[in-house]
Image 1: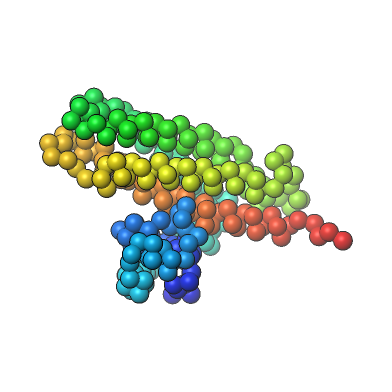
Image 2 (image 1 turned 135 degrees about the horizontal axis):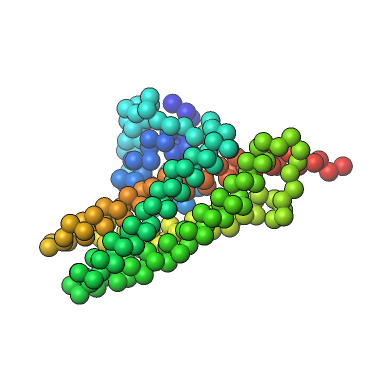
Amino acid sequence: MAQVNLNSSVGNWVTAHPQTSRVFEALKIDYCCGGGKSLEQACWDRGLDANQVVLQLEQAVTENEESTENWLDASLTELCDHIEQTHHAYLKEELPRLTNMIAKVVNAHGASHPELATVQDVFTSLRAELEPHMFKEEKVLFPAIRQLEQSTDDPSFPFGTVANPIRMMEQEHDDAGYGLSRIHTLTRDYQVPEGACNTYRAMLAGLRQLELDMHRHVHKENSILFPKAIELETTRLPVEK
């Protein structure tokens, strides 16, 4: 097992052993936007026994070692392609579907569940942030990262270093994480209320899956793709004499 421990960041745990993300999801430990926090600190913040959490993580690693994708070993181009073809494709299909579903649920159940109107407002803002965010990654940042990896010459970008758009993307990840957290709270951990119709149930299931996929999506960018891109660019910068 790769060397990760209580002092390792939560993000490093998931980078080394992606299957541990399921444990962090179950324990409500943020491993994407909050992935820089040490495992010990994350456990402290959640009031959890850190040693027991380590045992759960080690068990997850042992049980799933053979079936895990390890994106740490992928090229930057492969990782960009994967994020676009998997996570971006999912969002492009799911965001419109959930928009329509939420509208139907608000119309049918909004009177008895007034929090649904707020869920709709937060989701609308979230979608309005995520769609241009994906566009900027696909048209600006990811092509720059691919060029950085594939070019034999030192590429020059209009935005300077790739660290500049990366900082913007990370801030937008934080904003999206806040929106998802609000929806999580407003829906009481996606709890199905009494008398909920099938559309209501499907909406909650879809929102839960959206949060899970976004956690994995943002982790791959914040903890793997972005640091590797910055590191590669740094090694290629000319040495000042």
